[in-house]
Length: 352
Ligand SMILES: [Zn+2]
Image: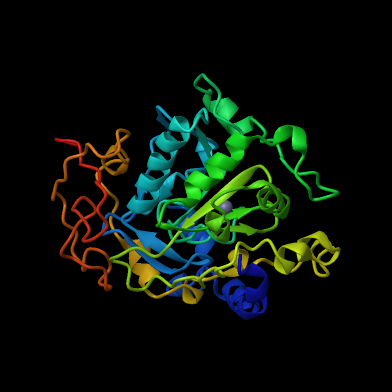
């Protein structure tokens, strides 16, 4: 999200990165997206988000299962099913509530890479395990094949010329789904296309307080983006600005229906922050996250499908020195309860 403002800052770092690649001490200047993009598994340390949504990383990530009774994960090859345990628990909870509300189930887009950080493609944010994309396309009543999950195209709900919702595609169930997502206290923002925000502004009756969390943004016409706040146990997580108290159906929304936000980018070839961010541009603790050990298996860090039924184990403590000597808490492991989070964590499979 903050990408366009950060470009100038990172331009210098990119030049540096280009000139020193290959030197043994060059990790500091290597592109962070290459290093984080190469990680298949999370850092097996306590759950912690470090930095900001568009400039950070996280440890103690867990994956959402590719399939649950009320969801299916899409684009599996991207390996972006990872999030802070609270984020993953929230998605499962939302999927169950959505089905109870009459939505057929969730198709899940990108959450984060196993250790977060900038990505090779897409997304300025999604770096600290607290962002998730959910498709507006309802889940079909059958399991999609792996290739369907790669290739199935999503349907935009918005006319790209008028920036208004295509009325025949919009249903009360879409509104209920967004309202449900906004109902959770941990959810701070939901990003949707301005056309969708306008549709809500024009049609929601009764309680409109939840509209405050639903924020207009470019894209987000075939999916919405759920962002939760910094979680306990993450002292280095940088909070985002609070949303204004109003419902946002005002001048700030009207701006999106002027010509200004849609002007062509004056400098389309300028690199995005994500593409030139080096390890030196990320919080220092992200090096420890990168160097932290892997969990014993992917199963050990896949969040239980049945939500609340997992038993907590304190196996596999990881010390700060094993994690690269940095300031990750050593007293708790990825599998131990994190104080105040109040969600179950996965249990390592016995003998694995
Ligand atoms: Zn997103």
